[in-house]
Length: 257
Image 1 (cartoon, helix red, strand yellow):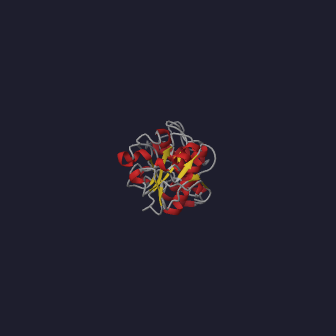
Image 2: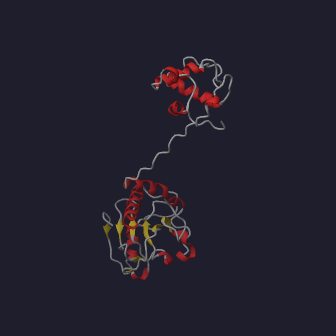
Image 3: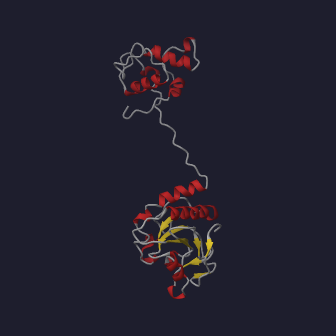
């Protein structure tokens, strides 16, 4: 991975052994960075990881992503692994979150790994060691609940790195209730919400404030002021709400209206 410090090789790997890359698996070293790197290079350990992630400093790479690291048993041929320095129940440091996000962003670009969490060994995305159960070595407490809970932060940061900005939800506005809705004496929270919007637009001069949820005698004149503000004139500014002027008023949805 570009930007990662190469600290390999290790005998504990299978060259060209990756069948596919489904995603990234979070581990915890249960140790220090120096000790874990030394262990992963020791043939007696029969263990390794594609990447290691110290509490401070940049990402470190021990195994190429086309090669199979020995990190999660039955999952080795399908998942890229990252061993994070620390002990359960540690959380990832800010530096570790950033490193993991940079890696996830790169895996998304390189292997189309989805930017989402997964708890399914047959799924895709950002997983964790313990999700594999006995088939992945039985390390069900790895990497710990605190780190599992940080997956959302890692994914959010990866999206920022890639320039993926979520589309903000459109405001929910009250749909036009129909012209016949607006009759003298009609009570409704929709009318109260309309009054607030007319006030905000400076067009509520005539509407009754004593009965804010009722369509009163002054409301047609107030709504006509809103229509004139939109450019209507003559009979087009008759003070009776229509679908176009209503949509432009942006009356917010009223619960249980």
